[in-house]
Amino acid sequence: MKIKKSQVYNILTLVVIALIIIPQTRKPIQVSVHKIFALFSPSIESEGNRAELSTYNWALLDKEGKAHNLTTAKDKVVFVNLWATWCPPCVAELPSMQKLYNDYGDKVTFLFVSNEKMERVTAFLDKKEMSIPVFQPTSAIPEELYSKSIPATYIIGKDGQIHVDKKGAANWNSSSVRSLLDKLINE
Image 1 (cartoon, rainbow, N blue to C red):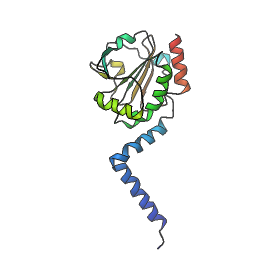
Image 2: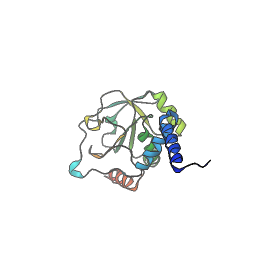
Image 3: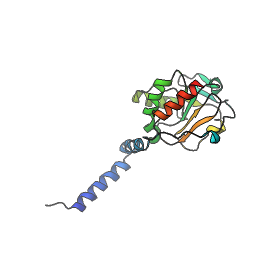
Image 4: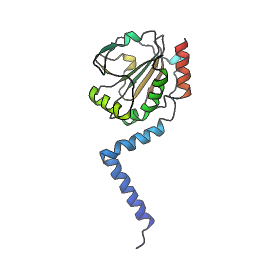
């Protein structure tokens, strides 16, 4: 019995649909697709378009339950990422952020903020062998950092100006992001 091209096409289409419908395979497929879109660097806001933080008062808890506040990062370069473990574009961009954190963690304040239970977040990061600093918000987020979608990532200069305001996945380990961080650190 000879199989026709249309039959092969129909079988492949059914397999792809089944893989997308099955929860165990859907997320890895989505993450892979978002990794393709995360190849691009985020754009840097031009000087006239930059927003400025109106307040640094934002209470957070780290994974040990210790209280932190964004006010301690005033006059420092800050990298804020709003994310979740269930979000495919968030997961897709995390490896580039881990690399950036590895190189700039002592020069830039990194805040990876999730509303999920900390046990879930730390289990996820342990499984992925990531060491990024994660936090849960315990007060309202500053208005300029509020987003209805995730991932949302911001790079804030020492002067409180938001140099990067990116919604969606991106390549954070790019030369343009590194150049921006170097410039902001040296200001």
